Length: 64
Length: 410
Image (cartoon, rainbow over all chains, first blue to last red; front, side, top):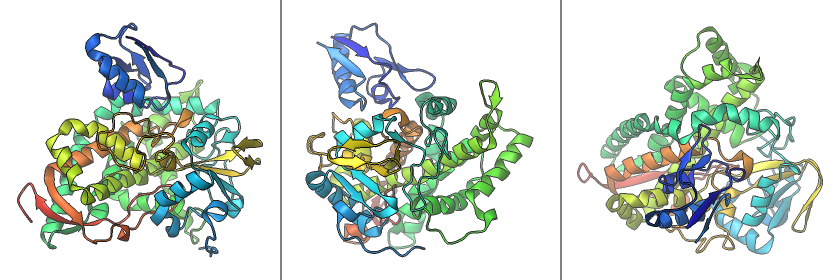
């Protein structure tokens, strides 16, 4: 699974950071930052889907 | 107070500042979404009410046609001047908005807010001790909107701003005038206003700075230039106004729900992992905040032809119950897994305090669940609860009967 984050679309709702802290960090202003280089480890795939399904701004995408 | 004629019809003559609207709001939104997705009223000089998620989402993202220069619909008109407005950044438009918001974002980032959690938890425990004592002396009866929920955000924001907690009643008085009765207050003494209070505090911080947000703003610069007093005053007013009634409403509505749904209370006690999903579902289902915009230039939304200077309400609570956007939109699903709710808004004005509000809601519920194992509404009729009017909706009185506390049965 590949994951991408659109930093322009992110408005800092922080839902991804709460649901999948292994995949997302936040910067000093509270905007999301990816902690992985794009590949999602298999054990975190469910969390990646949760992050996608809860982002109000559709800023996260996955490719399976 | 202005006397207003009664509403004749939600779709063509709504008045969201009446108790008639506030008591039945979710039902009214359902009607409008199905029958008249962009409602209109001639009141307030002309105001629109788009009730579907799709329209709310589009308007919130369109800062070209919709200005934030005034965000509380009132009969005096949109008095704010773009792009700064009365209370930056909430009343600001691009490009100034980003500058004003950037100043505040670090103080409200999730990591900064996490540092306030322990003190918030202690505040909740102290308030609960008092509320439980009140109940014990009154056959289990206590009004938890008055004795518990309303104090939590006041104490937290007072701490952040370095203001005395004992001024809490004063803040709530100012806020009530601004939010619930915009433009309708009887004449008040100029010394007894939020502006006078803030002028005094800001002058004090200039003399003796502390380790608080007001001192930070007094010291802050944009491009080497200090902020104007108007900017600081507006921003501090915003932090007070936006953080108190809103969070009070969200916590109160969540407890109103739990009083009527003991299985949800049990779930939260028995399965703490459900809490993070429950918090978001409380925010979706009981979102307290409806924002507003002013039409900047003529634009069409659905069939609605909006003219410059028209008001447009942004009812995020209605968007959150749109069956076109959410599965089982009209059901509270405590562990809902897909929940792109808009309780904190959409687009560039995402609630600055969302991490703070979310933390306060979660901690207030965790502490409640830990202390109270069974409670019910004091009045059998759930609609006996009074909901606040205007753009922030939540229970303003919430009398409950505690049936079983973890310290023993009352």
